[in-house]
Amino acid sequence: MKKKNPNLTAEQKLVMFEDGTEPPGSSELNNEKRDGSYHCANCGVRLFSSDSKYESGSGWPSFFQSLPDVFETKTDYLLGYARTEYHCKNCDAHHGHVFEDGPKPTGKRYCNNGVCLVFKIKN
Image (cartoon, rainbow, N blue to C red; front, side, top):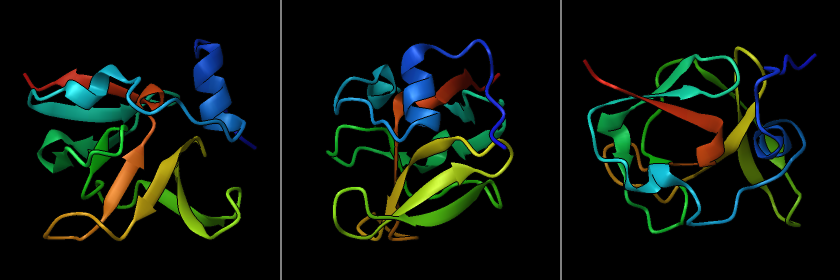
């Protein structure tokens, strides 16, 4: 059972719980360069450090590494081919897809919908 935060916007609900995707280039987090961390907009769990964020050119906030044990994955065929979809392990909210075309050291690209994230500046 997916636990939805009642304060989510309609767009957040669509992306996180109804297989939606935000338009590429629409997230203000694409340009976020400050030190801090990225948290699940639904449950608040810390998912990424700003140290792992990079500009992938995809139009969505991208990271080469997540924090340990925060996501579960499944195979998604919505576009007619296999992609690895990832969800918050705590609340099951969909965040994006992970690809094998990222930078070193991991070679991964976590392509995350910005509406699914809350950025918190490092104090």
